[in-house]
Length: 71
Image (cartoon, rainbow, N blue to C red; front, side, top):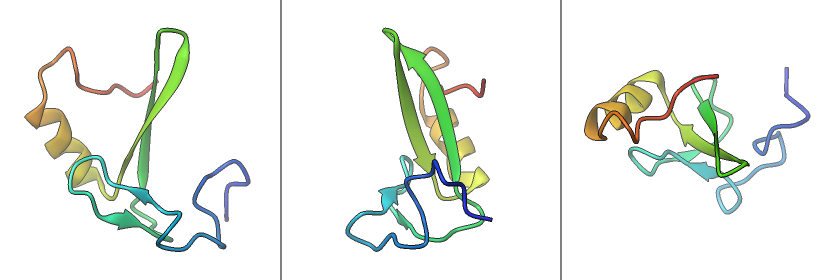
């Protein structure tokens, strides 16, 4: 099922695809795509990850105060 609110739909191509915040890989039609959202200064911020492993590695490479959290 495609989420109609997602930036990554069936019509996404490499030029419009999100990049993994950890490894920089383009994320196209990936079932392992993860998005972490948090609010900073009253605005939603999103980080896209190509897998749970990249999400974990990103958190480990940042300080606790910079690590994204799920809400």
